[in-house]
View 1 (cartoon, rainbow, N blue to C red):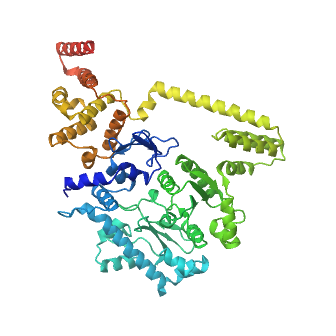
View 2: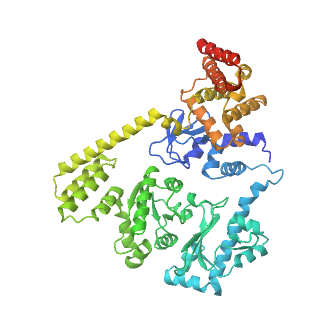
View 3: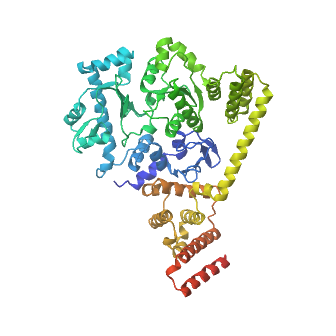
Length: 582
């Protein structure tokens, strides 16, 4: 649909990029910019910058960039029109009437509607005679109250292949619509469809806007798979959602408790702990860690105390720290998971357990300590060696000092011995890292990782000059051969010329015509101009144009196998003259 320019102008005026971004990312203002940890990749040092002069954002770590619309598209996983509607709703602006229905805009609201109807169906089934086994499991075996069952909208998928499918058909939904929502699956014959969830208790997954986006289903016996989760759909990505965040986000506590499964979350919530979430049948992802950082400063990991639980804990710790979150870990002695602990010892004891949760360093040293018998000299030496290696990786000087002293006391050796050993390992690790960095630089691997090439700077400069000085277009066009530009640069170049022919514009006017990579590229150029790293003077433009032309001639020379000797020599002379002029 065509969006009136007057509406877009009003929307941009009403949606200050710093205000919008800061509702997702803590920002620290510094003059004309604001800086914070990037919400699109894991990092410990802020490289995400909001530029107030160009109303744009750019991450120098991952290359994400664009305007306020691009930001909402990325962080909310929305299309362009949906992002406009999201911002308009936030700003209290009426959205223009749609001239014609766009089929691509229909699918997400339709999936929400199907999911909502499916959730009602499952819940009704749980309350009916057919749901007796589900009630016995949830309210009998797992001790959930009727209030909790209603609060979470828990349900039951009856045995059989077509219960939900037939119900949804009666409501007017087609099989293709149900497949898009992943509530049914296609049969092997490629034609028939059948219910995805059968003979399972159902856990609706609800996002922070109270939409049902997917489902989790658990068997009530030892059948496999134990848990089954909705496939990814246009409204649901397992790696980007958290179970029960719709409740946890409203808690004023700066902590979130991270549990391993749906039942642990619900049991803790019923016991009075609303600030608890879980991943959705997968290990913790960087996206989920960054999502938690939006709502909390500290995470208490409450995973199972068995081997797989410890493995999952170790992985989660790294991701949470990369997201800038302080992490503590529960030590549930006497129970394998939070649900069992609460049933055995009660909610007050569990609260004491949370308040006394160990920090990561203490937890990791405890895991190492448990592996060794300190009554044996050989085992004690092995404990010291592994403990020293771990403490050498701890960034905090204070923690290294405290826990190094504690380890020395446990092993019965002088404190200074442990300290010297830790310092020695840290020096070796530092030297090894510097050597690798030097090797990377020499081989050009770091430059490759950043996706940069030697000629990119000139193309960036050309785009920067054209964006900020549209009046220079008359000088630029005769001197630029588009075939000499990269495909991405050529597209941005053409769009800028087209925009300026129609009266000029801003980054937001280009957003619907650029993909994520192209938007990031343009935002990165504007960021480097704003930071003074990229000149946009007439002299600089001359250098950019000359560099681009030389690169074009050099490329032609490299492919001159079909030229005559005279033609190749003339081309080489032209390149030599251009270089002399510079």
